[in-house]
Image (cartoon, rainbow, N blue to C red; front, side, top):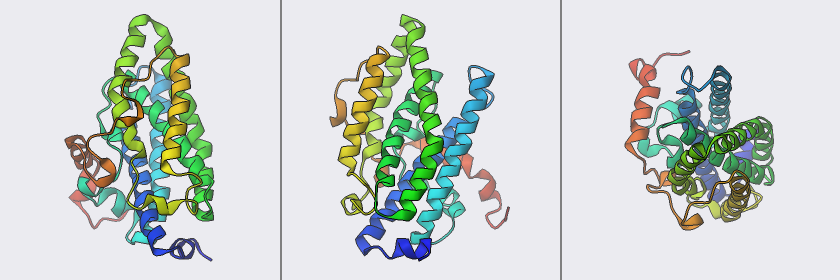
Length: 264
């Protein structure tokens, strides 16, 4: 059975939820990849410049892989999904669309996102749908380096000076409520367990929170008040976004909009 046949052989409710979920994951990766790319030439040192540029390329590459699987259910092409929709059709978490701000916010966001992504990939790798599980395992090998990079920088910034730690804590306080939106379920997500996910979204969030809390405590940082009960306003998984995403998409799609019929 081909990849397309494998996906389409699923029950209708699973297919619909799976298409939404693949799109949400791809949108997360694409938008965060573009945000990371904005640091090219501006990072604190040349090593960070090269490293974050590489991470950006890999995130965008992972987005394409997920878009390719999504098109087998939705039709169209990966490029059309990535660059042919308006902001209301995107399903990324709001956290990834926010402007980079300073280096502390970028690192905090990267840390929170990559911790969540690691849990998400583990859940997909543990699902019964081989084509998705195999994809998650392949991507997980690259993503582990993103995870290490973000955590190392978080510890480095937190240990530099008391003022630096306070600055990282302020970034964490800002990012934490939005980070909860990474686990906002797509419509019909319950149908994805166990065929696509090895654990439900709620369990993924609890695992993420536990892992994040341990790293933050070791770095001398505190979990922001409100905890997991906080929600990310607006709800990106339902297509509610900030003006930040609209502005970013205008920049990302400028070349394509200049000649939509061009081939590359």
